[in-house]
Amino acid sequence: AGAKIAEQYFRPAATAAGGDSAKEIKAISTSAATSSTSGAHANGNPAGKRRNGQELAQRFPGFSVELLAKAPAQLQTCRSLLLFLEKKLDEKVPEAPAVKGPEALRTKLERHAALAGRLASLVEKAGWDARAKRVLDLAATAQSVAGQAAVTAAQNKLSVSEAELRKELGDQSETDVEALVTDRKVWEKAKLRRDWLSWCAKLLQAREAGLLAEAEGRPAETGAAGAKKLLGAAEVLQALLSGEMQLGGQAAARVTG
Image 1 (cartoon, rainbow, N blue to C red):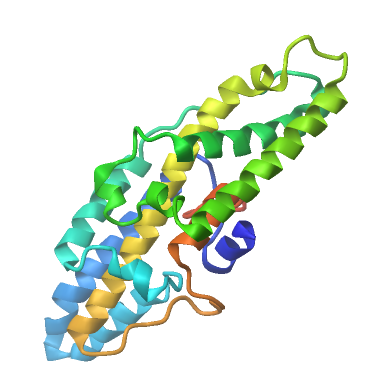
Image 2: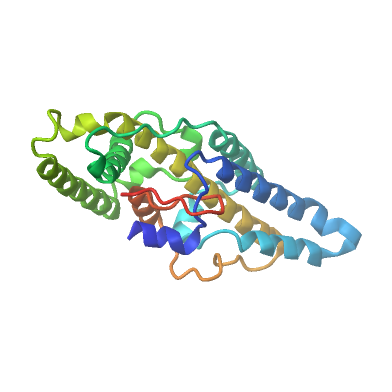
């Protein structure tokens, strides 16, 4: 369900490294800054500013009013946070380590490691950036009724996955499933935090576009064309747990799970 939610709103990422996400954030932030400064005064034509703001609005998904309201209400704060996220997402990411075990089960082991890593990252209290939490507190979302339901569903899926792997491994391995995916699981834990930052960036872009609309005296856009549902925090959590879509680049980059 999370994958389908994300797919309605975001372009798939080119790589897991997050470099393209940072480029997109920078491009949109620059466009927004231009629209709010030069657009309003160039040749005394407010229409130019209005067009820029609308173009920006078309590039963000339809987030719920409640979720957007949690983001900073000051334009400059949004931009400062976007610059911070741009730098974080532009950091070099190590390649995903290979799982161990039989070659025939590598894909299933990678899927298992991905889901296990996401869940482990979600419940770990340390390492959540305080600035990004001002935009979306994912750990707090996981404690809500809808969040707990999403986490429970993912945990059940993980249990089924482990049972199936144990059965398929049989006598092929002297080690348990956890030992076969340990390194990949650690990498996936870090990846969930990076993907969370990408969603925070999209939220900030949406919030920024809304603030620009308000400053321009026009109604805020309801989100990207074709959006069928407004995303709340629980939907973002579901999409992150699914791990099948990222923000940013141009090409598909499915992360199994």
